[in-house]
Figure 1 (tube, rainbow, N blue to C red):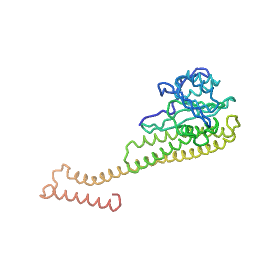
Figure 2: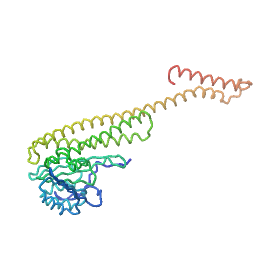
Figure 3: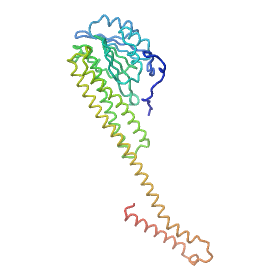
Figure 4: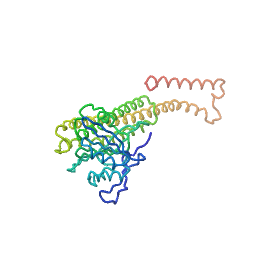
Length: 357
């Protein structure tokens, strides 16, 4: 089982001035991927670009919704050029490159900035695979920054491409909601996975079929705790978006944010249930260990108790006296063995009668 360090915070920016554009994560792809999706109610265009300048020129020419997605935050120059074009504050760009950001939203008057955690499952080992996603909403432009390619937005892209639902009829703020909704909905998938994992561990506990069960319980508790730390500030952030009066989100779309807020509450309630269940698994494991140890001690105690009278008998006839009448008897050896057998059988009968066996 691969060990992930969710709490590790790099200190490479210590001593640097505010607004320093330094990527604090790990490089997850060789080169950045720039994708531009443009659409309105009648038209749809999607294209990948090798340099940001060409993509920005295309955005400037299209009057509909422009969704610019950048995969690969390790390219600091790319992020800086994008920020310069949209006149993004240095502190905002710094937050985009600092991957340990707490989910939040900030209104910079000319644009809206959102950062949150997108959580998925690794395809190879089904382990938690968290990623920071940043969104910049400005007029008819939405820019998203991701650490690597691959996300949970495939259904949103499909709806845009096929023109299903209202997404092609609405503006950029609705696209922002659709992306947030996709991220939140995938939390349900993650929680379903861990619900099954908890049930599996519980079955293993009851069957005593796993030796590394303690490590599995600790791993599940750690990942549930990470999800919990990601969802709580996400709920606050969505609530703020719902309550704030801002020009970037139309009042008609606030109802969707309210529904999204309800989803985060349900997710948090499920997380708390799973957290209690994981703690309960640990209690069951410790009780199982204690019960197993008691059973072992009980068995050893019974064996030792049986041998106490046998040792006593053997000790008597092992004493080095010159005259012991029984030693001269012809059948003394077999008589003593028979007597010792009767003692053992009598003790076993007594133990079974007392239900100690």
